Image 1 (cartoon, rainbow, N blue to C red):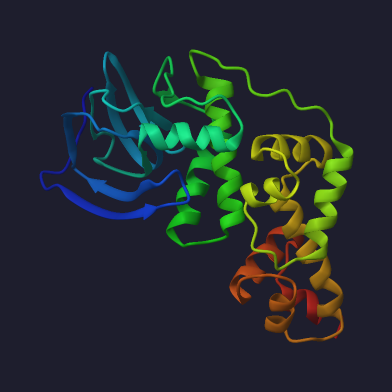
Image 2 (cartoon, rainbow, N blue to C red):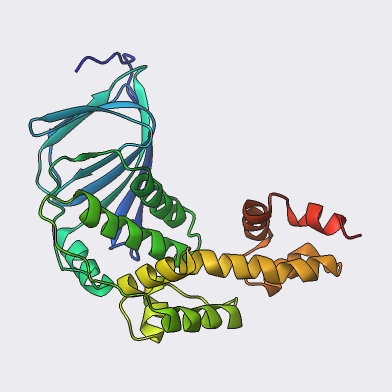
Length: 280
């Protein structure tokens, strides 16, 4: 593949360890004029392109990868990459040991596998891209372990369900209205609970996969999304009563005022300040 790149190679990379994301090493990088020569890792590589164009070669397969594209490369597969387009690209990556993937699948409650074994490493899947990006971003800012655990589960099960060449059937999940009602009550009763998908599933003696699938089927949204919805609903009457915004956010389980403002605006279209002013 042809690529036009500046003569000077520039990299801006942040690297960190994410123990609760399959013990992964996470990367966020911006590259200008950089070239990766043929190489392999002892880890799986789950990458999301977040800007620019990257020419990637994995074995005999080649692709120009753009924003939103996902590249999944199993451990020990030789691959290479270089800048294409205007010579720059950005990406977020999780490097995961095969044994850690297998252990996570077992905890999740799906068939234990240590490799992805995809027919193609190149994936166009907006939901998967969003989930992998979300895991990386949440881990970078240490934001909301509950959300991070959910999007990680959705990413791994989505990879196996929609893209694996050797498909292992996921557990069959029946509609579980009683379970979902009980989980909703648990979430409503304690808006401050420091939960993850795994701890919530353990409370109800089911696997994280079964809980997530049943809840989404019954409620139409994930347990974390339901919790955020209930926090916003609980905040509204407090805002209408004129209580300070920071106090309202703290009383309804948000990490801080910026977190409260971001989630409230996502769900209502306005900030808590604007909402409160309408009732003054």
